Length: 353
Length: 251
Ligand SMILES: Cc1ncc(C[n+]2csc(CCOP(=O)(O)OP(=O)(O)O)c2C)c(N)n1
Ligand code: SF4
View 1: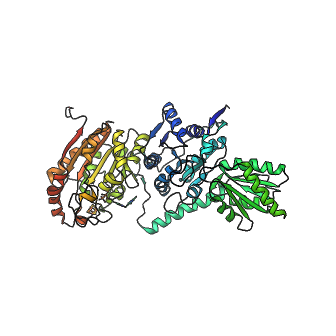
View 2: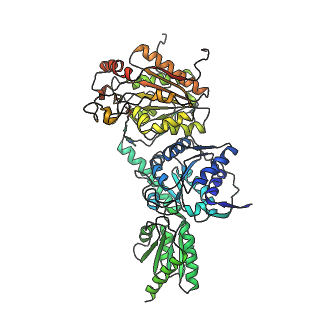
View 3: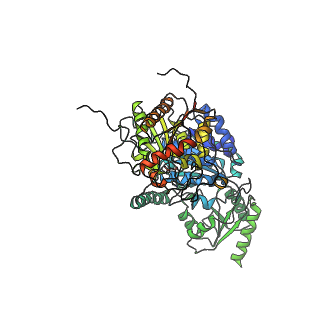
């Protein structure tokens, strides 16, 4: 197996191709442009389709069409573009279709900044579109994990027939790290529901999110939520680092987890018993893992590149029984390990006082 | 007994959900017949819009997907790129195609996507109860132009075929009507031609059909037919606006 040095955004694109994706529909936006650029180069080499759409709305609608037609399809964008994709996302969820959406987040609101942020957490995990729906959300924190999560997200979105998102940020997208691509034989999953033309061999397939009868509409939602419940039970992932004896557990995901990791090591070197719990999926949120990691801890600290979005899920996870502090930077400012270490010292001081 | 007329096998047995006297039904029949006559039902995939035709998937006897408002050409693009040999078509109203979905329409045409767009222009938003559409004629009263469309503030009606005909990507653009038997015959020819071009991989075709909305126009079905002739055709002249293969010897 070959180790390659790759930029996060390009690694996402190559991973998607290796995972069997042959239909990519995009629209330029910084800091995810390398995904589109890479796809425009690579797709023709593998007889795939790269199409630069007229908007993010059109791009995700093309994904909807391609997915309905049975293909492994994806799109990628960054925060302002993801807002436009919420329409298609809701239709994809309501039509029970798989699809991969990549969000290389930047700071907002509005046009905001092109610098990294994690301020679309609430959008991704709470309200990715109108209606009762969920989006499977993976939040990798290394380029290698971005690669692995692409494979995983495609598989799970097809298994559960729902949209999935790779929630990254400008830091991860632009960062170069060594990666190894898994050498797996991708076997396309059976899609008897796909629109392939009935060929005079079966009844026509219909894909729609419309249910004029409220009772039918309700049962469709209930069926979907049964799947969501199973996902919450079986698919929540997290990495735990030195949490067993930790007084303070830092909870951070994505690029922030890298910063938190350094801060936790530095804190240990100074005699502060710190640990880290890193959500890998943010929906489903690793509630049980956080509850377990927080059991022996005296306090938790959520670190985010936002004004505090995930922190509320952490508080819920520990059932409001432990103090959950928050430290964040916003608008494209990235926190430093030293700043996080400072927070740990303050909390530790408070615990010892 | 000799069968002289039967329902196209490309239409399901379901009763249409359109209002009495609405010409959406005629257009369904013409589309179904055209696809069937080309033997393409088994590889046809249709896209239903948001609008009165949203339930078209219950009527056409082929694989169908329902699109977000205005996005049908983008969905069709995605499907055409997955199944290049299939017969992909959209069925859209004027609000869907010429207001919220203008960008999707124009760019699908410019890319020369190998799809057929069936464009039902009834100069009004039917499904939502008769609001002003991009194609509402100057002076026409609707729920949201109660004093008649004032072009100074509400702008001018959009002519879609003329606009798309100027684009290199467009293969075929024709406007027809369905308010009389001769017009219906012509409409059938246009739709059939569009699907022929599609099955030959010739790119983007649009057939615009001037259609009625008796319910929201506040007219009887018969008065509505006359209204098409008197008010719509002067604003939306019938004819072929573009046909890349017009010079070909008829087969
Ligand atoms: C995003 C969005 N905006 C608005 C609507 C409401 N809506 C439903 S049908 C329709 C108008 C359809 O009119 P038209 O395309 O002219 O088709 P017709 O009903 O006349 O056949 C609108 C605005 C919607 N469903 N989705
Ligand atoms: S509202 Fe108008 S366009 Fe819609 S079905 Fe009724 S008559 Fe036809």
